[in-house]
Length: 311
Image (cartoon, rainbow, N blue to C red; front, side, top):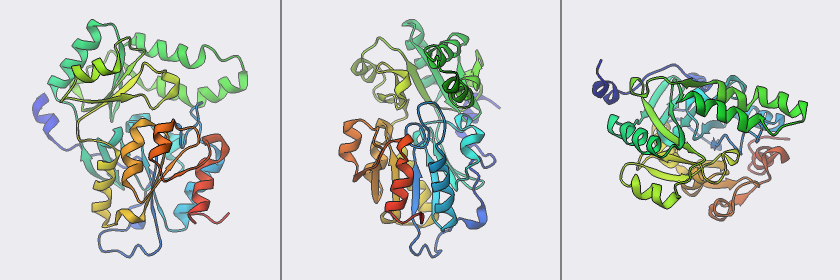
């Protein structure tokens, strides 16, 4: 199959979010007092070491047991969601900041870059020696240098053996998922992440105007000169809309929790938008509420406030 025809097809695949098709409410079903909850991953569900606090795991499981639907809504690709996250159990996911939407075993949305987009990214960042990687459902595509630099960045300054062990189970799983020197034209790329760039954000936005929306990175570890590049008209809010239309659920019955710049549309769009305590000021300003940080039980406290769990 040629590149063009491959990119024009809707990608199908097995569920990655631990959801059960039987418990998902379809169009016309009675939602009652149940809520539909959307959770960001980095900085919201997962702490800076790449781990999910026990309180957040318990909150998700209790909310689902109480009849609420809980979805991941993340900038990550499915390949970056390792088992420690997915095994918590979710009803589906919005991944790649809205480029990929899946509920149960059904793919609702899969938007991807054209070959021309890939050419542009390779040429621009390659000529300026800026590190970057491509996100796809089947993996993360980068050079060997990028993978090793990320490994040094994550573990290089850690001296505490306990923290290092946590990183091995958390963020290093992301680094190990990187496909080194693989062909990005042979897959469906959904998003671009650039790292440690000396090109100003405004210059990047001008360069890729019309092709990408460029925002600061949602991962603090990557630093202020890193960012995300998404297709125009694709964001977490558009992914949420695809799910809600499929379920026949009104936005007034939705809650979202996030902490990053790629959460802005989501927090403004849902019935109740909750910012984490570790979120930057622009994210807190747009949210309806602010909870505590990841390691201060932010998700659990928000779930309790909205009656999604009992204790």
